[in-house]
Image (cartoon, rainbow, N blue to C red; front, side):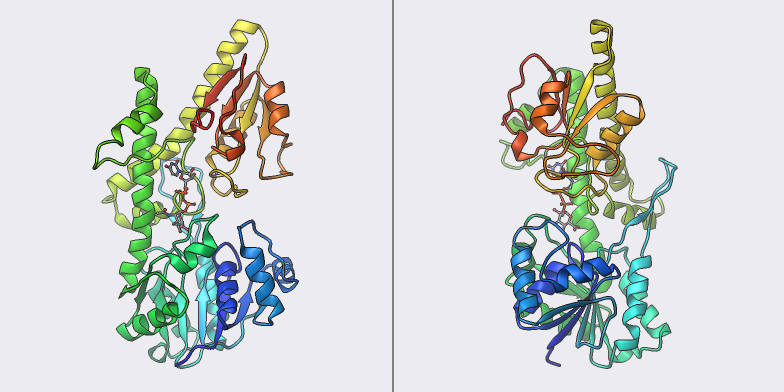
Length: 406
Ligand code: SAJ
């Protein structure tokens, strides 16, 4: 079946770029989001998220009439589900957070009345193993004859900040619930992806995505553990890693204030949750990375105490950066935000800085030059470019991301 129309469910960081790209490749795209203001913004040719080049793609897609947003799905040749798969937050720090696939189930139910024989239904959301089968199950329960529909998983793999390029250039993994579904879905991606489209089954595709992000989490945990050890031994961890990386088979990642974002800080838990205790390394890495943020908080508090003992007053502390990684405005699962919130809650006098955000509902955000001028202790939590190479005299500087040395 030749695909002409595509319905994309979820117009966030993955769904909107995908919808806009497809519309620019001559598909008629119907984008669906449950938030009316998101739908309205897109229909005006504008965007509600920060991502380079996305505005140009959306504007031209909407102007050409090939992209329309709505809060309801319609019939289409192909359906792409790109909704969040977070975890259930719980207050027990020692428990493993459980994946939450409620949005996938709700999105699947919402398209069921419009799915016809010969259609393709693709799950792009990063998902626990078995979720694509669950999509098939929900469609079947809703009256769809799933033997006549191609159902597959094709995990998104794009890096925020480079989404429009990576959507086209990255290799993709496609795993169907049947070999025919794999083939039909892979052929669809081949019409707009310049990277290779690799075929497998649904479970392997699901696990491949979780594996990629867990691999990165484990490697960052190694760097974060090194940073704690080096602090104990009085060694500069950045210099140590640079030296060790000169070995031809060593490539250590960079330590930081912890690991954040909606992907790497979340996806490994999907494996741990299903592993029944067998994912020991992956679980430990997650905990090491979470612990790194606690360690940073302790460091800052101890430094504040020393200051207070010497100067007879509480220091002003500038928290430099709130985003989950450099040069973005995304605060999801951000270690820098977690650290800043905790310092405030624990009674510290904090000046919060985030150059990529103007306003924040919980506390004031101030300009970084003003914060540096006013603060006694400057804590670099995110390696934003604007902080790079800042030379600060006569102040206590705690640089947890090596940004001042560039
Ligand atoms: N980080 C470090 N040290 C490093 C690299 C990263 O501490 O050396 C931290 C960052 O500061 C951030 C976190 O890790 O807090 C995650 O950042 P990231 O740049 O590693 O990854 P994401 O979450 O922006 O995107 C990842 C990517 N996955 C991999 O690189 C394996 C991306 O390709 C995925 O599409 C995305 O997750 C996703 O959506 O799953």
